[in-house]
Length: 355
Image 1 (cartoon, one colour):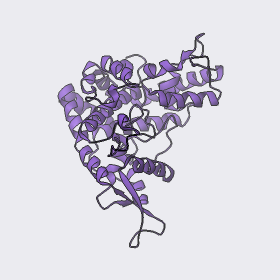
Image 2 (cartoon, helix red, strand yellow):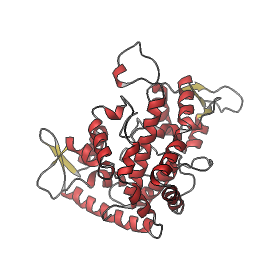
Image 3 (cartoon, one colour):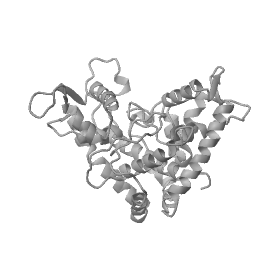
């Protein structure tokens, strides 16, 4: 297990849980597919991911909530909430209406689920528990309970969101505090543990933890050969769309250069220095978070061939088609090698990058 940090083990377990849950939702929820683009006769919503369900759809009762109340329930910021509501409206899941009288403040808006949004919320509701029960059957009750207890023993701040936020290579700042709910599911526990470690790491590191684990890890600034950008999705487990954003940020920051046809990328001396310092910081933070929990050993036993049993996409599922098919095949063959070392959730909310 040398070189495999606690946050990487947590991340791979979390991403695998997310894929299994998203696949289940895709198989159960009526929706439009990529093949329907441009066909005006096709109706219905696009898919919506576990992230959007946990942080937004799950919070919405039939009568709706004000945007302020939804932000409080999800722990989201005002600017992020505006972007998330734009996506949910575009996908056909919510309506955002002017507030009228009563306890609604002037200028406040009401967020209500559409019929498709209500169906998506109700379809999602049992899936997390169903996947967790599959894990208990697949890995054993003792292992799954030990995983829960190990995460619960970590010093995770109170009030982190139910679901993983949209980060896209950013540092994890102190997140808004979400309203308290009942006993959190396993995916929420995993997400909160990852976020807690990232908050700790990102306070003093030269690169975000996402950039450190998903890009700096595979880019060697001292190597004479650049890494082809088209190879990075399989090397990192991250989608090509997210790779383009991450590499672009490194290049604009003077931390990497990109050249050639096809394009290839390499860290600059300054980028390589930052990567080395960030990886050293990761080891320091990991040692602190791993102390005396036994959690890494539990996760290491889970992340193996049995993990792949739940990752087969449904018939005609989007993860089973190009451009994601190669990553899906790699993940099924060897989850430990193919899954990302840090979750990458984009504005579209899914892994890797799109529901």
